[in-house]
Image 1 (tube, rainbow, N blue to C red):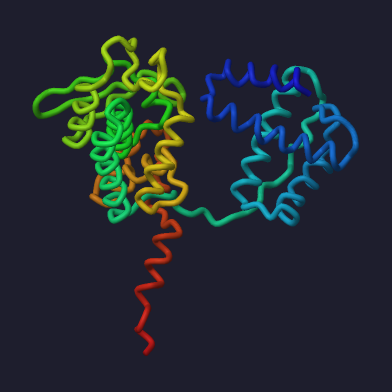
Image 2 (spheres, helix red, strand yellow):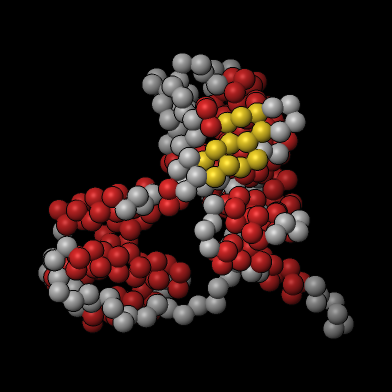
Length: 309
């Protein structure tokens, strides 16, 4: 199983899939592999999987593990991609995932921060920098980096990996305007994103304290001796911590991207412009930002409070 998964990993890398996508596929496949071996008492391999296994796994996720439809469908998608590769590689003759239906679900809008939550996050970020200057004279530079990065993500809609891939030469800031260049977005697409005043200010504050001997990555790990590129795991932990400080549970970098897009839509910006800023090639992908999410639905029913008294 390990050799086959490594070969599949190489295939995904050659397809230019992001590291997050690759890690997600492999984690989902390992989950299926554990279930398969516990259920059938034999090693997991592409040749051993039958359509019945796939259907039973789907039902196990639904009825026993009680997973959400989105989680089940994601795991089925990972298994489908793996089996399609195995067939292409000549490891199997028939794809056992063909014809297996996903779990039907009502699509909801993405998770984003409303204006009140964004205010709470920005306040927590500013407070974190202020306190770090007093308490951590040797570490406050990292806190300034974190604050600037969160502000940039919230004001540009960058994917996390796009932000971490930025080089110093990709950022241009003037007195009244600025821009950054995403040289390798999803699907190898390049795009240029204008910087508003908040993003420019955040970048200037970081550049003023950024170590000068840290290579050409914009965001660097100043806590380490090597001061190399900042890792996605480090940023996820930082955003989770700052979210907790702001009273926001399970905050993720992608929620900042969603918040940026939702802010644009709520301000009347056309979907085609939002799609260009986010790097979407299909306008239907951008339409999720006009789809109500759970918070929107909760606010809608709250409007009825007292109307029947």
